[in-house]
Length: 406
Image (cartoon, rainbow, N blue to C red; front, side, top):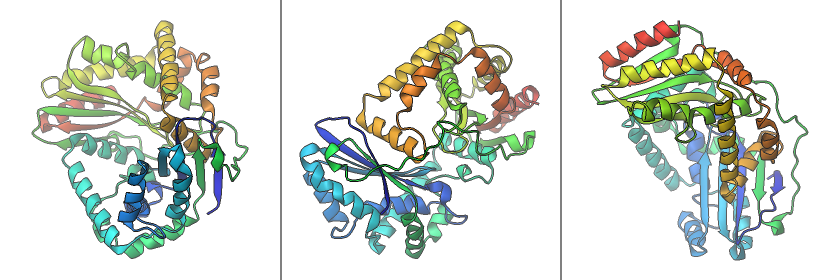
């Protein structure tokens, strides 16, 4: 394969190699949602010279780990082993990518496992509420769809469909990163793009209440609330201020959400922010899990906090604390070699400089409360709401949401 290669000279007594392949579940075609998830699982279940058992036994005999994950933006395949065995195992990554077995028997096993996982997801109110939220936020954009797939689509998939998808997979751009100096037999081709660029998609959902609200009714004592919107790409200059807002809202017991819902009122089972890295506009949402007795009050508090973010500046003292916590999170993420390499290869695949932490450290301090307020006004003045709970409670929350965010 054509490889874009980066060597990260971080030495341990073990070695890690990761392959990133651009084009994950976001390239699933209509009617075949889940096909790249299945393809990713099949890649590590046999390659030229090794069936699924032989390949698994080989890695286990060396105490090595072989993992794969299919995300919205791409595939991630990783190898981890003691350095004395790494040279023997590293070439297998090439075979896994370029000459996988993709056998009929393993396809049916993976298909069944995927269907079981999707059925299990239907029992999880958090997943149901989130899936409905991102469906209304992203509409027909690829990020609207579950990257594991949909049950009806997966049921109709045949091995021939996966083999056809693999032909596309072979032509997608690929990147390799490792901390092992000895395996540097290629050079990384990093494009000379700027660190940041403007947002690459616009909000494509109509701004009216019917399109910005969804609910799931059940008899549970738990009510789940998701409130937020899509924001910007990882490549945008706005990404860092949004991460600072996430720090202010959800990092530690001094965070705004913890103080609002746990410390002062003790009413939430779970509270936090979901703001993952994405090549295109990333979701930014606040989630709450509360008892049905506290649900309406909790939502009123959330609306109050939301209005403060829209209309007032975060106190400088609290923003400085959020900056310290965000810096600490970067440092904490540098303790794990897996996290370091994962972050670097994802940045490289986006055409960005792989050592962005240093850039972050230089620019965090310059972010002002006004910068944060400008972003909240831009992205959060008309948030999307997804709730799960008893119908009467959901209806009452909807009425309050409609009144506040008209």
